[in-house]
Amino acid sequence: MQSYTEENYLKIIYHLSEISNPVLTNAIAERIQTKAASVTDMLKKLSDKELVNYVKYQGVTLTEKGKSTAINIVRKHRLWEVFLVDKLNFKWDEVHDVAEELEHIQSNLLIERLDEFLDFPKVDPHGDLIPDKYGNFADLSFAKLSKLKPKDKGTITGVSEHSSTFLKHLEKLGLTLGKRIEIIEVLEFDGSVELLVEQQKMNISREVAKHILITKN
Image (cartoon, rainbow, N blue to C red; front, side, top):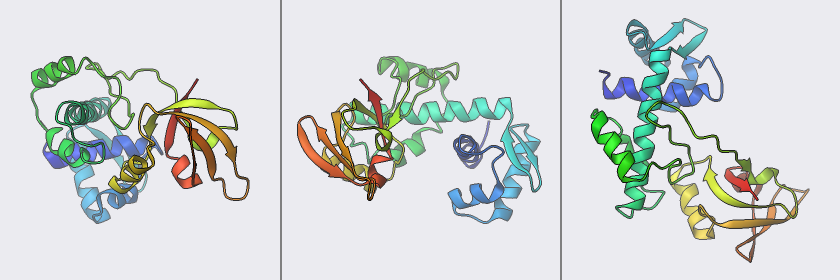
């Protein structure tokens, strides 16, 4: 069994490895907001437990055991987020910190019952894929709203930025999961996007558009 801190490191390494692999010590330190020396000490501990492969100055990768553990933590986190939104009426910008606490519960039976109770969701309230109990993710394809062209249509199915301020901004605009959109124009000058959201016209910046994920239809 891993400590909360060890589990958090594994999860962070897993997320960072989706961007760049091996994961550099400084990238982990920046994400956790701690000193690189502290990260190195933890990576040595995780290496001793055969959860990571760590080579000084070359970064770190997860072992199969470490990856499996990390994916299970991600699974628990995202299931709890679904529960908080669907059953306890939390908003999607309120669930992350609470799920951070709940993800460390060790009962596999509880998580399996939770998954069944929620009717085996494939995505969390932010559109992130939820792995099943075997660590497999559903095969769903998304496109960034910023990459769409005029007359393209689709449904908002996820976001790649999870900060509370960004989610509240989308909530204010009405750009929430399940909303249907159609691109009217992408302005060449600044990349901002004019679109219809369920027949209501609006403009959003390129910065906002690049973090909204769409299923085209």
